[in-house]
Length: 395
DNA sequence: TATGCGTGGCT
DNA sequence: TAGCCAAGCAT
Image (cartoon, rainbow, N blue to C red; front, side, top):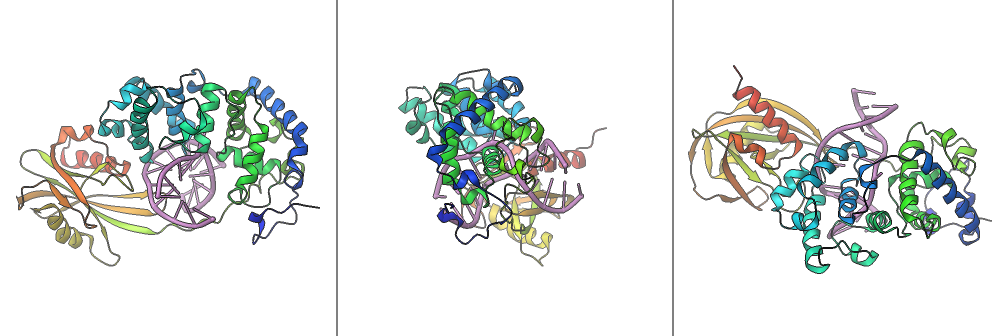
């Protein structure tokens, strides 16, 4: 007899996949959990990775690493982590820093709400928790940017608490271990329960790190190294040679495409016009060059010439094409058509205008050598590079 | 519960 | 090489 979770309803199960752990009474399997946990800890002693945030028990440093590692690979995080701790060695330093400086340190890492939340949370820690990162689950969860997995990751690593985690690695490992016949997103309650059962009460620190290492180095999305896996004799996917079919993935929707017109406007003072994006939403708080989305079928150049002067209170001379840039975001693709134009006249003197959505934006003329003081999205960093190569050729 | 939110590594 | 996916969270 098998137990069906409500999440299974409406999803066609693959009859070739078996799911004994999922259909067993979880509480009666505690002996199996203990064996699995110990086997993983033994593997970790011999084969775990040496990562910088494992060399410290400073909750602040561990917190920073956990936030940076959200949806971001270890290799990408390493240089940012080192630089960050140099620049902001403790929570008081971070709390006392201007948000723009924090965003600049995060520039290029993506998901910029993480940086804004880190900054806000640091100020909350100073005010509410006397400058010490909280050592309990509820207080940690009260901080912006910290959800259940990140709280478990930080508190297990810093204070050795036996709290479960549920990141992409754990989902994949468990889906294979139990032969999960639905996408992990449809069985999260069940997976959390197993993760919680597996964490040893006396060694949450090493166990959670080992769990993620197993997923990152052995139980990888493609070509898992099953022969090196400490769980292979218990793994339903391995036993039935289904490790490449699991976990079952959700069908991805194809991304819509947008055309973005951009103008890099310069004046005769050696300055260039930039504006700050609204705090909320995509690339919030970062700076960019005046831009607009071009409706399909319309001329990018005409759209720029009509709309940018209205939004920014300026007029410019005939724009020149500099470069086209392709960029893929999380939920759409974009082609940037980038132009340069000389300022004609400034029709308004104020520096606070509205974009096409009506949201207030700040705009500034800055010297070209000040560009590296402002946080820009990756796409605009490429524009700066192209601008320098085109407009300021070296001789 | 579904969607918005960046960028880069890897195959 | 185009697409998948990464130590998820907020709403």
